[in-house]
Image 1 (cartoon, rainbow, N blue to C red):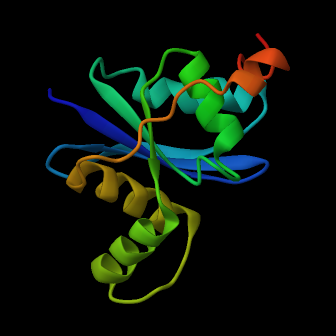
Image 2 (cartoon, rainbow, N blue to C red; image 1 turned 180 degrees about the vertical axis):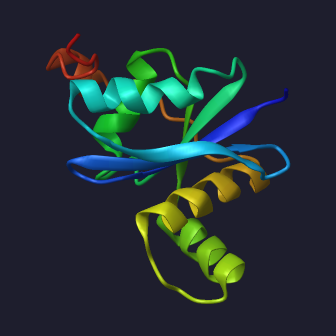
Length: 136
């Protein structure tokens, strides 16, 4: 199997993910908490695939903590701008209705279709404050 994209719609206490292959076929997904157990649960579907990339919306805002945890764990993460995922949602569903599942799908679709999304790197402030690695 080729590369898979794990689209993530992050929130303060939860994150919704969807796993897509290069042909935009849904391979899995779900909603998890952002605590230690939820984070482990969130990683499991993606780690089934060797060639994977995490697409997170809002890596400079609400998605930053989860994106930094993923990067600290050696995962490849790209930032999907909210404007792009909103456009993808409208065009794929024909309306602008938002749910966490449709957002995660739209984020993953944008990452599959868009070259040149910004890759997230380790934030030195998180490292200095010991926030870069999740508690184990």
